[in-house]
Length: 311
Image 1 (cartoon, rainbow, N blue to C red):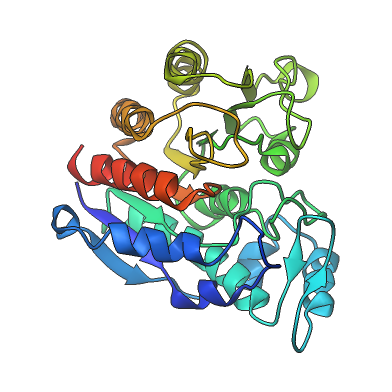
Image 2 (tube, rainbow, N blue to C red; image 1 turned 30 degrees about the horizontal axis):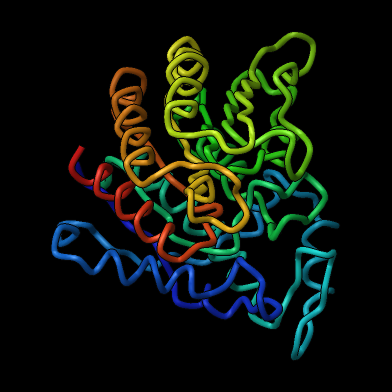
């Protein structure tokens, strides 16, 4: 496999309040673990700036302007109880979009079999017109729309295994028959969406939620993937698979309240690679979402990227 790792040091400049879990050290932990010799064949690229054109595929101009106007010259400004902006937030958020669209370009051109974007801030809680849950632009949704408008991809499947439901991604694609959104997540839990009966508009069944209870272990997660997520992806037969790769279901995570291990993330990555091989010539893009314990995040990303790289 040719695996490309996209990152950018400017994502460290998105500052957050003291004690906030979505901190710059998350990316430092990832960079450190990916220095191991088993990742010597990992191709590393610096993420480019995203474009306003790409952002506009999902978010209206007023959403973009709202973020621009909130940026302080110094210090922090809180948008809500969870989400703050600093002088470095704009570049980090737009670079995260740029990483997602660059990954699509690399997959489309055949220069990569798969990509992992180790960027922050995350994106899956950002709705069409609302920033929330640490998120400003919905990177996975932008990647899916970009793949369809700028490349040959017609049908895109998104699988979100973050411990929190990706309410933003679900809302964006609720009425879109050409995008499948699947999610495993702790439920009921923040943000309160993701029930089993949320299946898309007018019986489209393009939304597949597999809610898991507090304290769920690896075998619960694996059962949900085997019996709900993978059959849905196979039936949908996508041209491209996008992952909202959140690692906050790890048992060490302070927010997740679930009991997954790095082995579970290695297993699910392998299953998804197998499915991508069946459905879409192995074309897969993975975008970092959550994961807030540095040890748990390091272990999980290492397992995930190792499987992307070595199959």
